[in-house]
Length: 175
Length: 100
Image (cartoon, rainbow over all chains, first blue to last red; front, top):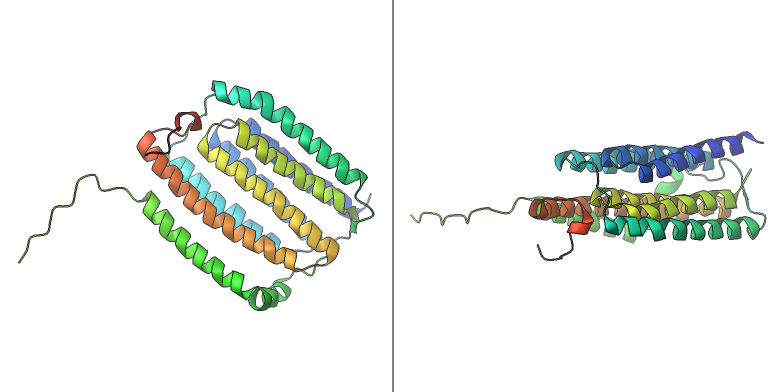
């Protein structure tokens, strides 16, 4: 067993444990912390593949910014333990076996018919110096469009989350 | 050397966990986190394929997926706050009308 495989299995086990813990926990804050563990483990997997830029982004953007937003909203809304209802029991009854069946099927097909594709450790030239030119030359238009998307998302978030005026604003006194 | 299929199987399992969470969870915030888990699973397969085919564009796609996920999380959480403000609940079983 090579070091690469051992590290892959270790990070994969952490990611898997976090994902299952996300499902098992009933309090949203515990689920959020498990999701952070999953994202950190995935950052390790990216680093193992040589994608350093993506690993850094994963930690900064996902495990940092997005999850802080989640935790902030959980605390803002004072979200408590979720209750089980009839609908959720039916969903567990059909959802878990169905998804497990699909997952096992996909894993079996991939492991059986995957050919001889091996990924060596650090296969990608993933430093920011190689991603940057790609991002600002070939993918310049999508990059600019994402800036518009983020602007729209900011405005949408402000509009949606702002408190609606409870009382109509009195007309201003004329001069 | 790790076979490409191992990465794809891990990514598929993470995606499946996200689907299960989306189905069985009843807290709207946890459902939203399950969607993030699915996006993470897909990102892993993007990077694994990029490493296998030596295609750097795969990493740029991961970048765009992250940007869209961040924008989606912002708007989605704002919607959750708006829903909570009008319904006083986070349970999706009790949020069955689109009308606010």
